[in-house]
Each structure stands twice: as structure tokens, then as C-alpha cells.
Length: 438
Image (cartoon, rainbow, N blue to C red; front, side, top):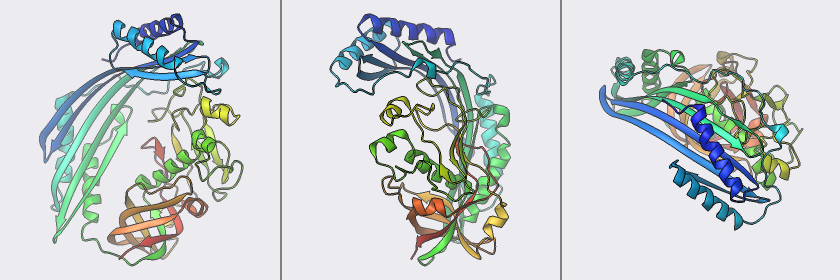
């Protein structure tokens, strides 16, 4: 069981009081407890079973405009006392920064809504193992599948965030996750693929046989890939890949990147960076959402936010420190986005595949080839050639390249959005990207 709120609050109050007595003008403390249990199977045999129990503290002390942060996993009273003393001494020797401070009191979250982020239910190791047997049995029904691996993890967490200027709150979260990896072989070709699912509540995890079946189908489709010539072509990103476009966007509009001038989207506020039918939302209020929360990592209230409306950039992701540098108020995005997503497009998945006579459909990218300063993008990839809306054959050993200024302006979305991750996107098409082949 995770520690209750009273236990965490008592430790937080101890840290706040002692920090003040030792000379801190302000203090922020976060104490978190997490318990995780996982099992792993390989070829339908138990491979590993683990349990972790983590209790940690992150303490930030201020002396006027000086600031330092220190962390520990030892929460004995003597260690906390030593930790506070070290933090104060470090703070005294830290240069002043005029932007250092806690959030203003009026910015703190006042109401905690029930976002259904915690499930009291648990699943024993024997049931986890049975779940994974069903996953691997389903995947192995296909003759081409020669190896399988699967995992199931359950995590329960609780935390408290407290500040010396009056904020103290926290909440419990849970997650249940399962994944499957399969290896397929046929005619001398061998390929590997995976699928996974993660939910806040156990009952929402879905069918284990579906997870195994989907993994097998994805893997078998990749067998006997071909190489293609270099060309400029419309590229369709599968949903598991298209969400990465949003992750780059989020990094580019973080207040830290904008303030430092290291983003290709600097000076783009209220300018059209996408086509007019594109909207991007960050919504921390979605019930059972993997990124949902009532407040950010500083305690600031966060609400649903339009980041892009009708193609125009309307908001950055702003925390207190960099917000002050930009002369803007925090919008509760310390720690980044929450549930970030493209709103659905106006056409179906099948219609998207048929926009062009020939497209490249990407299901996996390799590497992290984004230059956030220039917006240049280049990654290795695998996928399929699509003609007249139908998969013709798999391809591998290709490179796709472009620039995000062009990518954003030439992006078409299907209407198949699903909320499976923290960041979610419909299937999308980008016109005119460059593919490097043989």
C-alpha cells in the first residue's frame, strides 16, 4: 500500500518548518511514494518478477533570490535534518537570479477535482501471469511467430507538494500496463514488432488476446521488406508515430526554449504555423487521462488550453521561472504538457490513405533527428508503400527528412483520434517530404 496523505503531510511540514528555522526565506518540498509490481514472460515461460517500493523527497530552498534543489530517498528524520542543512548551505553559495521565486499565492490550485486517476483494485502475480499467457498464446497462433515476450506492470503512487507560502496538496495515481513483443520469420526474413497498452483503471486494460493478436499481425506484415529509391512523396504517419510530431511541437513552445531563443517557433505567437483546419489542445482535466492533474509540479492551477487554434499559435507551455523571464504568467505547465492532442480532422482513415495514388506509410522511426533550433528533421524509418489506399509491400532501410515549418503547413489529419497515451494524434499525412532510399 502507498503511504497515506497524512504521513506525507507530516514529513512535508517537518521540512518546511526546519528550513525556515535554518534561514530559508521560501521552501518547496515534494514527497512521493510509489509501489510497482511487474512480471515478464518469454516464450510463455516466466522470465522475471519484480517489486519496487520507492519513497523520495525533492527539496528546494530559497534565500531571497538564491535557490538550490536537493533530492534523497532516505526519509529518516536525521537524514531529512542533514538534507535541509546541506540545501541551505548550498543555497547560500548559489548566485542570485532575479527570476527565482515560488509562484504567487493566487496562482495555486484551490479545488481538487476527482479525475478518477486512482484504482483501488489490484491484480496478483498469478493473475498477471495468466493474463500474459493469454497474450502470448494469442500471438503464437500465427505460424510465422517464432518468439514472444510480454510484460505486465501495476503501479500505485501518492505524493504531496507543499510550499512555505501556503500550498499543500497531492493525489494518488495508478497505472496498469501490458506489452507484447513478437518475432516473425518467413522465407529467410525475420522481423520484430510490439504493441502495448496503459490505463489508469484495471477494468479498462482490455483483452489480452487482442493485444497478442495485434502484435502478431503488425509483426507479420513487416516480413520480406523491400528497398525503395529516393524520392519526394506523401508520408502517412501511423498514430503511434504521429504523436511524436506533437512532442516536438511541445518542446518547441516550452517557455524555456522560447526564452533561450533555441526554438524554431520563437516569435511565432499569434502567427499561422499550421493550416487553418488544425487545432491543438492540452487538457489536464480528462477523466482517467494518463497526463491528467489538478495542478502542475509547482502547485499552479492548470486548465484546458488552446495551443493552436485554426492554425495560429495561441499559447506557450509556461512555468513560473521562464514565464517571468518572458513577462508572462504561468499557465500551469511546469513539467510540460498534460494530455496533449490534435483535434480530429475532417476525413476518415480510409479517405486519408487515398488522398494520393501512392504514399509511404510509416510505422516505426529510428533515432532522434530533430534540430529544435532550425526545425530540421531526419530519422531512419520502416513502413509500407500504399497505392490506391491499399498496402502493397513493406519497406525498410529508408530515411525521411524535412523541416517542421514545412511539415506543420502541409499536414492533413484523419478523424481516428484515440486517447491511449499522454500525447495523442490521429493518423496524419504530410505532403512533399523527402525519402532517402537505396
